[in-house]
Amino acid sequence: MKELRVAAVQMSPTEDRERNIETASRLMDKAVAKGARIIGLPEDFSYSGDTSGKLSFAMDEKTDPAVAFLRKYAKKNKVSIIGGSIPFKTDKKNKVSNTCLVIDTKGKIQTRYDKMHLFDVSLNEAYMLNESGHIKGGDSVVTVDLLGTTIGLSICYDLRFPELYRALTLRGAKIIFVCSAFTLHTGKDHWEALLRARAIENQCYVVAPAQIGEYMPGVHTYGRTMMIDPWGQVLMKCQDKEDVIVADLDMEYLEDVRDRMPCLEHTHKKTFFSSKVYKKQS
Image (cartoon, rainbow, N blue to C red):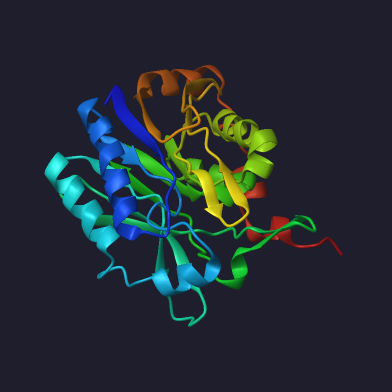
């Protein structure tokens, strides 16, 4: 496939599941109208609120109305959906997952990715977040084949760990989604720089659907949903409002970039992608 039309949704979720589903549906309709074949949603698109609310909000994958919505929407509109993330119950009573489901054009769940890196930060006395206190992290690198193209999955804070993105690329990813609720505090300085770096390093398309607005009391998200090409150029960027961006991702251009500058072929895979590299030297 030479080109693949992809959309990324920017929205401001609330604690109201039904309202969030309605907002996602409205914005996805705009993407479908523009011919998008894959649509990405932001992190926590079905719920945004405090920790205790998320714990009581979480349901099982099989019973969550947001999952039923995604499956029905994909089948009806014949699109594939990168489902941002949804909190699900886990085997830990006080922890939920942060899970991205991938739905194909038949409405079937193709795979799931559980957020691997959890946002435990203390930038100053007024700005402290501890995701590991209520989220059970994942431990698997996940890619999926959609419409003839390999897609890599990541969520928000994952963006700061380049080894994950190289692992996704070495597994064949040509488009990597970064479904996010990136904070305003960090986003204004780091968001675009990190997205462009991941695209340049891996010579792939990076699609970053993001939240905008208040994520939880006192914490605001940066927005600026965007798509980056394999040369690191910004193809599309959302303004500071709920919206959707749509772009044609040219796979021939991606292969041309990789052919002209074969960085991936020059990667020392045996050196950097083995357990011994992480062991201390005696």
